[in-house]
Length: 215
Image (cartoon, rainbow, N blue to C red; front, side, top):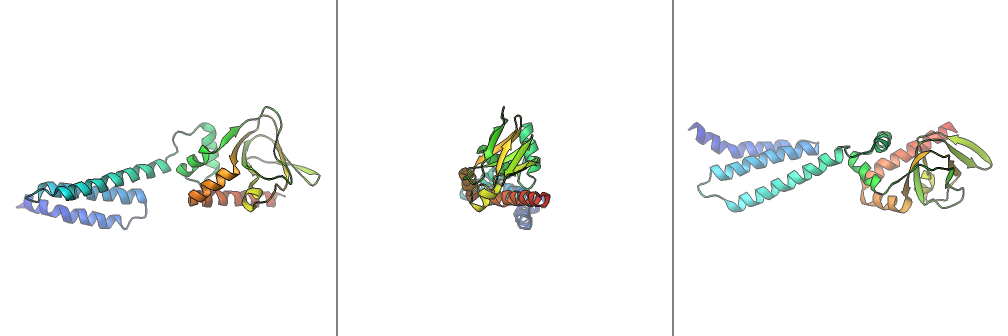
């Protein structure tokens, strides 16, 4: 009798877990509960009906596979593995960007450590790259005046956000470390991934505000 009640209770426990999953905001927890519920449904189909419901088992297994795949994607997006030391430093500076979004940004980024002084943007010229200086010395030239640009700092962000020519000339000294993103590729990535646009726009806005305050 107890065994029979336990067998029949499987479907009710599975249903309750599914309902509990719908109350979770965290996608990983939600999908983990759905996986547990699905496993109980599969067990129910094997031990309770007199005739095995293969159609129901098939689609339940498909549901299980999709949930497991999506859980793996979510875990991957939140895990900062396979990052170099410099990438970890950069990711720490990009606090609003998740590890998955950061990896997408790194796919179109190029790291540079120039052996001689290098001009990144020129005043009045189109901005074809967005730069982030992670270390080293940089100089801003604007209207005949010059000032040191502290690192870390974005370069070319005003032109990128406003679609206008560079508002100043920025030069980095030899040995500086910076990352460059092609403006067109970055804009295309933001169009495909709105979450990246939100996070990056916030970083660029904070960077501009800090520069204005320092000026």
